[in-house]
Each structure stands twice: as C-alpha cells, then as structure tokens.
Image (cartoon, rainbow, N blue to C red; front, side, top):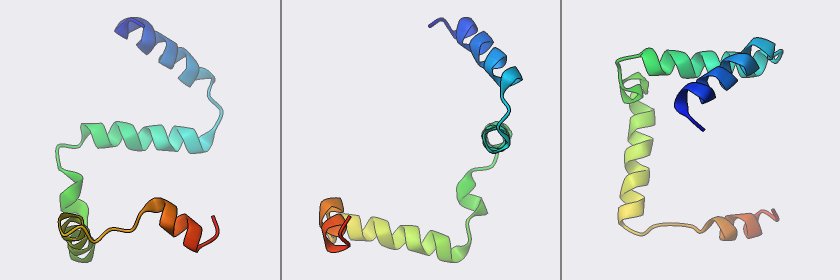
Length: 75
C-alpha cells in the first residue's frame, strides 16, 4: 500500500477508535518517537545490570530453550 494511502487509512481508523487502552498505547508510541533520548538512559542501574548479565549468558551459551521451560512448567 502506498505510504500516503496507509496514513489516510490509519487516520480514518483512529478517528473511529473507541478503545482507551489502544489510544494510550498509540500515545506512548508517538511520544517515544518524538523523544531524542535513548530508552537505555531511562533504565535503572539494576535493569542495565540485568540486561548485561543476560547478554553475557548468551555469549557464554548459558541458555535454556523455550520449549524446555514450557515443558518444565507444563505449558
């Protein structure tokens, strides 16, 4: 679909939208796109540490397969 046609379709859909949760989410998306700051800088020190530990685990091949976790918990 052409870019301008898609924008028009989205505008029309948005004007008819009556779902507060979706509207709030779209506002977050819009605000995030306007922000010049990287979300990384909004994370706490503990959150950044957790991400770093996870990346190190990946590099060291310390992984648990998704299917294994599902099986373990009966999902």
